[in-house]
Amino acid sequence: MSDEGQKPPEDNFPEPAQLDDAARTAQKRRNLWLGLALLGFVVLVGLTTFVRLSGSEDNQANFYYNMKQTGQEETPALPPGMTPDQAAPPENLSVEAEVSEETVVEEETPEQ
Image (cartoon, rainbow, N blue to C red; front, side, top):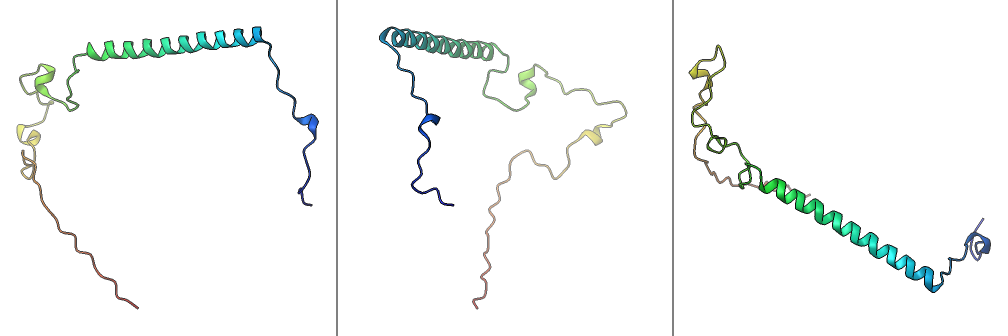
């Protein structure tokens, strides 16, 4: 069962509608207004987003928690039953970042 050389029936493909000049002009006008409405919506959403983000308190480029940014000058109170020793960071945690350079040794596979 090979389909070589067979054409699809002509009645399956309807001819596209031929619009006269008045219909084509009306279609272009509708498309222009639809495009302008879409552009207006995009501008409205962009301006709304810009205004809302510029008016927020966290508009600085600081994505991490910062006590000075929230207005808290003091450390928060400990939960009931917790001692300051329990709340202290571990001794192996340093304030400054440590940069260590590790050398990667690639093992050679024996050739066979």
